[in-house]
Image 1 (cartoon, helix red, strand yellow):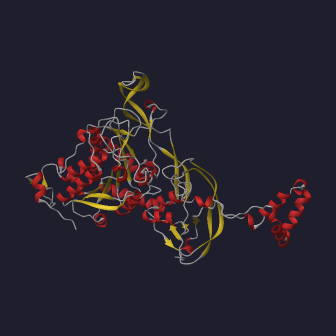
Image 2 (cartoon, rainbow, N blue to C red; image 1 turned 90 degrees about the vertical axis):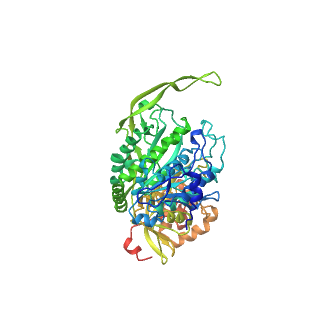
Image 3 (cartoon, rainbow, N blue to C red; image 1 turned 180 degrees about the vertical axis):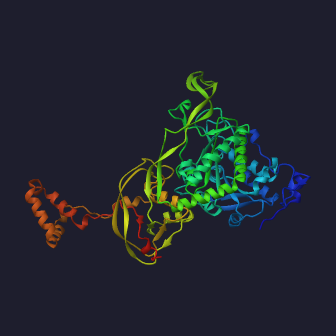
Length: 596
């Protein structure tokens, strides 16, 4: 139960009170929390939590919740702002409210969102400039700091190319894992806590705040959105035709006009930039699998820290306003998208950029030239800030499917692969368990070729290339093995994680690597001869074929080892499950549904 101590706290803050709408909060007329981003100071992890606790104490409409654990042993916090003072996700969903989830500090060296969210929460609770009305249709959820372990490694010596803020956290979390490459594989407690948050709170709109040190240009804030044509059409069309145009137009009314994230085409922005296609390892790619309208702000590292904070603050306001104004439409298109995801049988695993489609955008950049170093006095080739320009440039933002898969009716995951099953469960996957041992005709993958990165990537050896062969065969499964129906609103997650060729599938991230290893010694050496003779005597047809081959092929007749291999290859000893992908595809729905 929430305890609130108001009088002593409010006495330190303000004398007057106002009422917002029909809520019961007595609200101070001045800021409840103080921030120092104007002085190039970002809050520490503990300062951020303390400030959210202060907002929790002052406002009945705000609640700071401990939501799962992180690798460093400290909780993942969630700050919830609800006008009706409802803090149970089931109650919020029954009320038909939209949920806007804002995540900060996935990379604590990029802290502008951490400070901006605190200012945003303070201002919306105070109803500054009438922003309290956004809560009529929307519940706002804020993760204060996602990478708690990274934030606790705070130092002034981080990101050597940025001058401000004076200190910030490191990119790696408590296990030195980049959390924005862990959304699919979920090796960290942080990512697993976030997955539970997604499934329980069911966000409609998601924002992840970042800072970029890539290109150099005049814009303070850039935006990555889920690629519209990777969504079901109802949702993708809404994002492309309504949401994105209004968000960009909304930012034009602020001091910080916004452009798409700058990925160069041919290293020259005048020749165009391309949209960033997000795979499930990153936050927006993960959100896409659940039909969540996902966005990532990338503030420009070379701009003053106060401007970086204020620009993402303005985007939070713009996003909250849009969510409030289009609440009913967001609900309808997401419902339709979930239905389409449930019903379709062809799913896309990979895309390529379609360079035949583009639109023109306004871009303010810098020409490149010879720049003289203030330190060394020498010249080098770089962006010349004395040569700004504004131009209309091509923006390529359409992708075409390159790899598609027809979904089976079911997947079966043997219970031995408990680490995969655990992740499927926390991501909201409905699964049944076989109630008896059974043999089924299945479609079975065999991995025929795979190429992995030479060094570990984010803690695992990622398979960058996967080739496979599908075979029909009988296979025995056991009581307790898991059956996954492919008739769920989370089908996209199921397909992309269980199909080996999915960009961030469990196989790609080496969860199933033992299926590639040989365990039984099985080679036809000279000691195989006794078994070979016995097998030929028991299989006259093979013995006849063997004798004919010796008569017809003189080289074979002189090849002792070749003859042993011939018999071996035509015998059960050659049968091996090496390379057999553990998960099976099944299309015997009527029979299988009777086995759980």
